Length: 175
Image 1 (cartoon, helix red, strand yellow):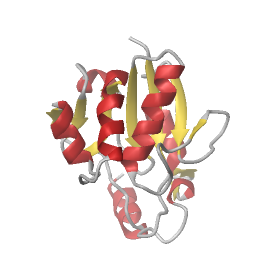
Image 2 (cartoon, one colour):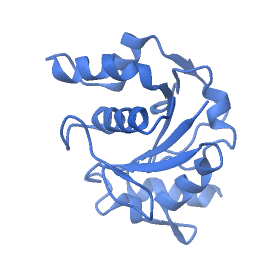
Image 3 (cartoon, one colour):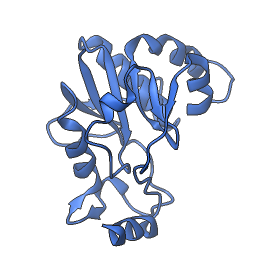
Image 4 (cartoon, rainbow, N blue to C red):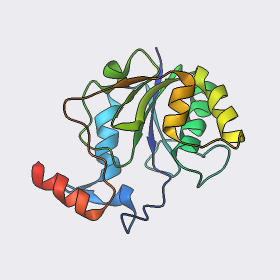
């Protein structure tokens, strides 16, 4: 099972007020924390929506600024072309991820119920995603998940979803 780990980082960070990926948490950018959390669980890494480090930068598909589904579509397409069977997707603001996230989400498709952007997706679900993104239907993670029959996974301690500087400050106080 070959897994491509993808950090979805193409958002505008409008609620955060500055570049969320580069916001410091415990002295390092959020994106570095997320990368460290999943890199040992996957065969390769990439970032959707921006460049970061030496990893491939994946372009949103079919176009940028359409939300996280387009980052996931770009990631699934990239994974398929690179010979990966699965994508493990996480948001750039999802810190506190379990060390065995990929195993928890298997069998795919599976996602974290409280944060459906976090998921393990077989590349075979790309066709359904492309179809949804080309339609006039609502382009939401929950709509997509219902179409492909993905399995919801509940965690005892959900990862953080940092939407504002105050969220980051509160999470840091807990650590």
